[in-house]
Length: 544
Image (cartoon, rainbow, N blue to C red):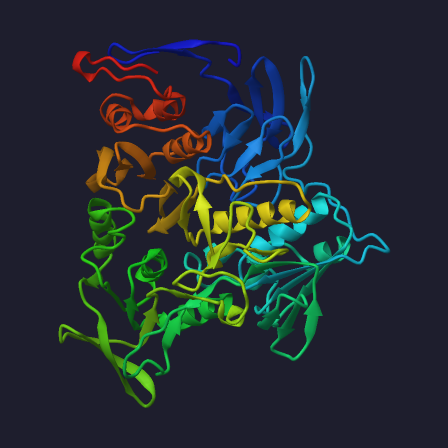
């Protein structure tokens, strides 16, 4: 199968390629991905180390395979993780002439520890993001022998924050990315429940809320953002909730059982909370300031379908409206009053209307920030201050695939990439950020995948039918695809992400051809469009 070539014809189009270049095989009790690339055979674990997706259903491009679910990439020769999300590498199995010898299901890349006599200190300031964890691990993987201090205001070790709005009764232990034993083994200090209050970049010192002061040689700031609250009467009543920590998630889960809940905000988090509560709350009402959910990011058609999906589960929507007052009784929420005059009964009010950067402690420092108080960095995650780096939700950075437009992207995967790039540049290993944004959301057990940067799109080309909840959408700007989203069309979004990662474009004409000619089973062919070729739609021809 791995040697067989196939010829695929689709209406005046002929493509010749090795279709079966990777195949899932069972070796003992292990699931192995057997790969043939450029005549070389290799065998790696078949389950993505992030959430266990079968890589055999992913996208193979050059030396790496991309996960069909969330876009993580692995080197097919070494099994090393090359693109996030996820923390662990794949096992790399021995390939003989007649057999494959399989070992473990995942592995941690080889890491060093502190070296006696090395006094260089790298301080990592975090706030719930795992960018600082990736930075610390990358430093040790590159054999940095100095002191590493991770500081977070949370009371938990770094954890998978994406789970909080999807599984709200989550236990702390189940979402930890690493155990304390891991940090001890690799000499990474972890300080919990400490928040930076001020920074002296000349003396290279950070002062914390408990009065302690820590000096550094190099600094990574990844303090993220916090939830933005309501500004109206009644905002401080009991049972007005915001989702920021695992404890918040558990409290919301308990408070909402069998109750009337109101969710303010139709962001990804707000919609996921509504989805999670459909079989738990007595009633669910969602308040949105726009006409449709996700209107700016995913477009009106997809926004309308997501609203209909939840409406079928008796979720009520009040769009183009805002909260003007929260009324209470005995100190607890009783009613939510909208600007339109509508009054909605409520036992619990969940607020998800945006975020505020945790950058107050940088005020008065020479670190450059934009008008929204985000820290400005270059492609190496360096600020304008020597030896001070920034990443995660707090950073605004040049995005390669958006022609170096400065952006602020609060995606889990991007925060991890920031941490790695910062670590390498701290060690004078020149590395620029080239990651392609990849995001996913879950509504009623169905996954919407998204890749790219679609801000400012002017047109959408859709393959499939949005109303049937099976589609691939291309977001167009200046006759080029700048982002893609899908539902029940895996691994199409991963294929588009791989195309973006290669630095190649997908034209509007190519997107239209995919939408009308290429069947779902061949959606991986998106990645082999030849850039710069002309499309002759008048004769139904298309060059790949």
